[in-house]
Amino acid sequence: MAANASGHLNGPYFSVDLHLHTNRGSSDSNLALVDLAARAHTIGIGAVCITEHDTMWDLREAPALGRDSGLLFLRGMEVTTDMGHIGVFGLEHYIGGIYKLAELRKIADRTGALLVANHPFRYKLDPRFSFINPDHEPIDAGYPDRAAKLRIFELVDAIEVLNGACSEDENLFALKVARHLGMPEVAGSDSHSMGSVGCVTTLLDGPVADERELIDSIKARRCRAGRGLLQNALTPFDLPA
Ligand SMILES: [Zn+2]
Ligand SMILES: [Zn+2]
Image (cartoon, rainbow, N blue to C red; front, side, top):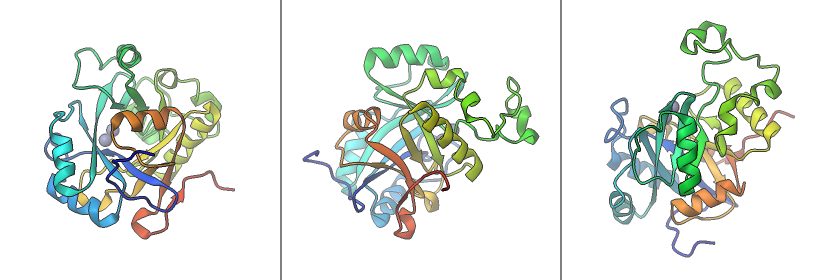
């Protein structure tokens, strides 16, 4: 257990919102940092990860934020790649060429970074949205084993099986694929405004103090997806019985 973790424990879990955009680094967000800090405090979350689009926060800023607010802020980024949006933890900054996921994988292998397939099935189960994904026919939701063979899952370490902006069907299908592959399951709100911060969270077995401990916990599968923190009813995300 980390000695200097600053966040809250929620029952048996240390909950982390792994996927958030602020108006500092994401032009599509209206979530101000000061509001994020206040909100995170109110809901009693363990840690929040700021993951702007294609840009990493400066190393010195996140700890200072944490000191000011008494919260644990962790740095990641959401990289737009040729195989979709990838959550990246453990890189210091954006590196040219990582829009190709195979290249990002090589760099992650060299540096120990963690790669997460973010919302891998958003819009992809619905034929009406197939124009968004011109390379693929809509994915047949009856066959998670087929979707598990998509190349993206060979190149990431974990799957975001619960995304606050995805439909229940998209999330459940991602969970089935993760279970089929035996890969780590994580969750993030994908918040761009204050109300949804922490609506879904990654549940860790214990506190972490920094990005390295977060990465180690997820790679070791000491994590799962959950929701209900905002209702005081934190529940792991599971397939219907
Ligand atoms: Zn995304
Ligand atoms: Zn996002």
